[in-house]
Image (cartoon, rainbow, N blue to C red; front, side, top):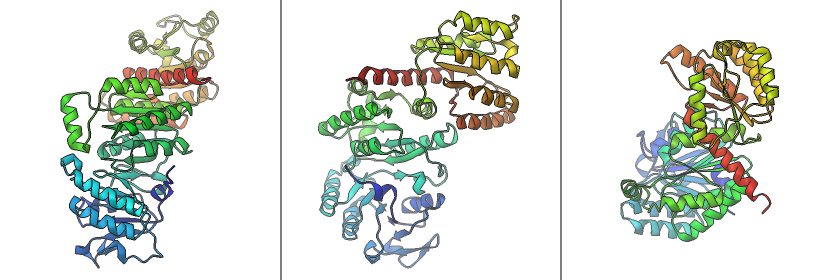
Length: 471
């Protein structure tokens, strides 16, 4: 087991190839400053030696730093042909971890450079991320791989991506839109040394990481593939869901992958079979990935099965929701006679339909009726989760009503709030509404289909766990 403490919590960070530009090494300076990284930052560039960038002194070589000033983690941002030379210097400085940001390796046919770099890394016991990647995002340690989009909010989502851009994009969506914050994010690129398995094994034992998301273009060998399957199954058995976004189902995509990270994609059919065996949950795009992560973030600790209770302010929308839910193997069961009788005591018999899905009509805008509706659905033994649909008028009274009801509920409460108008003031209220619900661990979805897909996946994971718990 690799000790990653010096990577995720380094005593200092070095950037080789630091520059005045916003790209290359200059990019990583602003990434660290963006999150107020509060430990020493060392910059290296022989062409800028003696100057200052962002009030930080630039050195010519990492070997100019004295032995009493350790550098645990280094980002290399120089042309690929120079990487062996600067990596040799990192080894002499006893650096533990290096991210090679530089491209120009096997993805463009320069396999020999990867071989040379790996030889040097093994000689000095350096562990490598990349090449051709952005490295790590650790909010708790204030290490970022974006200049603007990410913040220091830390949570339970661990991410391992072969795309640095997508790692940033999904981390930002999680933090800003979905109330789902990362623990550690790794952009691994060509993975000539450290690979998916190494970080998955770390996440298996990492108490901060509860959910894992992967963006996979390729796995480098059959041996790594076997280890990959084993650790996926270990994670599932431990109750840590793995959300797997495997790309490369089409010819054009396969060719793009080869030029992106220098590997072959592999058959999607094989990946689906592997996911079924290991409990991993496959998704098709970034929206499915982050919505499923949000689902696990907010309701994974609560019991849930496929039986859903739905309430809406209209018959058509409740029918549409039921139709889509059932297409994803979710059930909308009948209410018990006791529950129906409870509803008849406080729901008017005009413009309403008392069944599951429940159509409250205009009565759904009455705070007291809505409050009683939620706790009554929650009490029905045929239902495992309560879904309410709210598409406009995200007012304070309605929010307080939800909070009051949820304190009395024992089952997951789920909000479906898709957009029906382009109204900036209403959208601003919706953002505040969502943030308050996330504090209560109530997930908020933007579409019916995404809600259904996510609930289907979390139920699939529970079914996998139940099937294997006694094996």
